[in-house]
Image (cartoon, rainbow, N blue to C red; front, side, top):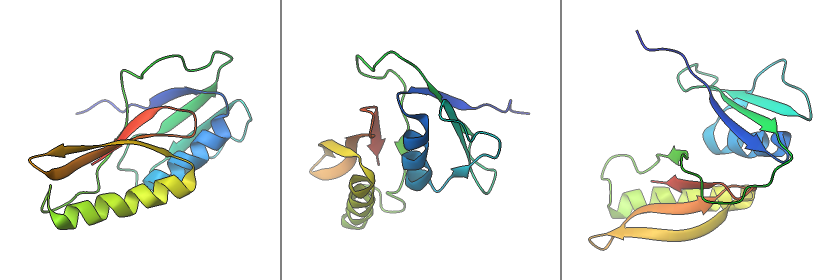
Length: 126
């Protein structure tokens, strides 16, 4: 049996970061974490791991060594249809406050998009 786990992250504004990731992933706030110093999200279908954010004083200073990949490409990976799904998710995330960094192509097909969340944490949409 697998061990239950939570993805934890530092944040300057835990509630804002939780709001972004809840919308990006379809998660919901976890009851009991209504504090300005921490926030927690859960998958409403109880499939994905919880995600917690804790306020820290230190700013982000370098590239993350661990990040979230949002998987929306679906069937036909690296096809015109998968690119449409990637671009649609990219537009949604940009509207939520993300920043697009670059597109990564493989054999002339879009493989994934590198983005930053509102606090500058790298993640990929693939």
